[in-house]
Amino acid sequence: MIKKHEMVLRTPYNYDTDAASNESGLACEEPSLAQQHYKEECDINTILQKFNITGMLPESPLSPRYGDFTGIGDYHTALNRVIAAQDEFEALPAQIRARFNNDPAELIAFLDDDNNRPEAESLGLVDKAAVEVVEAAQVTPEKAAE
Image (cartoon, rainbow, N blue to C red; front, side, top):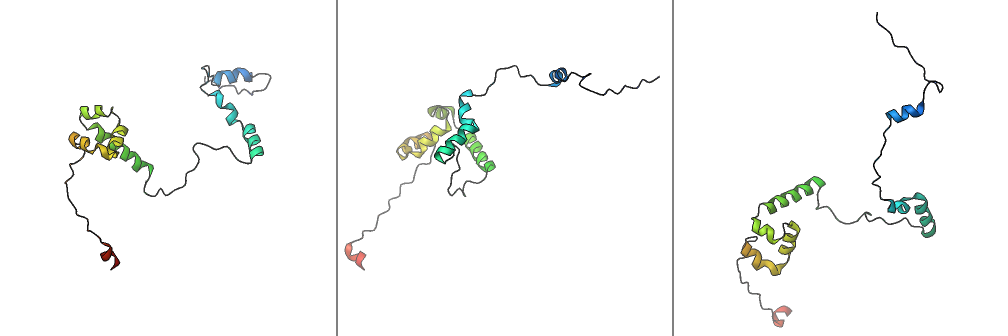
């Protein structure tokens, strides 16, 4: 014979809500990782109190920046450029990477300085510039007046 389950109607008299909550709830026993020293800064009452006094909202370090950013592209393109630059840096010989403490930013700073060009050429990082002598046209005051 098949037994049917009895339907139980939960009422405050036959059901312990605290015990059910403890059984099904999440107990976080680890210490909190929240940084309590920011508590005052994040309190809405403190923020509104400062706003009432100064009439300005607190500034955020991540406030919006205005400018012409049309040449930057999207996030995916920027990330691909960073990955390609990292791959190219890692393809350099170990001695050259060690010269820059295995940091691509140090290599970029080195290459940005024109005084480092001879060393960059000797390391093979840049092509040796073909020396072209271009004589500047001599402009005399008489020719400029014409």
